Image 1: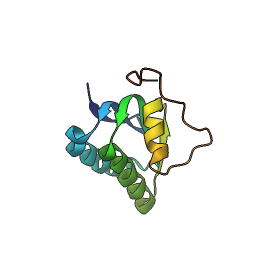
Image 2: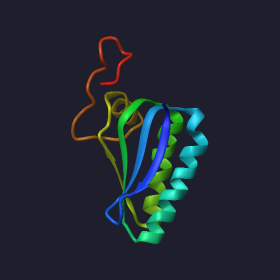
Image 3: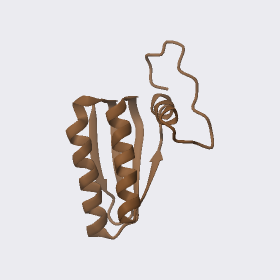
Length: 116
């Protein structure tokens, strides 16, 4: 199942959980998530949002656009965005898009169909 879920963890942090194939079918939900995170940050006074990608099977251009937009909104309004629990496919897509990590992404799985 492909989902986008924004969770306010009771004043500790805001987490956006992405799962499945993050593609054009989720475009509206991803745009809404940027707005929801910005609103929650304003209401709660938190300064950190986490994007959890431990269940992402693939991360398409619309998913990368979401990450860019959320990061830009954070820079403009004073909250930091970090990525957590990236799957191999998510890590490779983000790395290919120009983000740099301390550790390089793992190689694709031999069957290239499974999440790694």
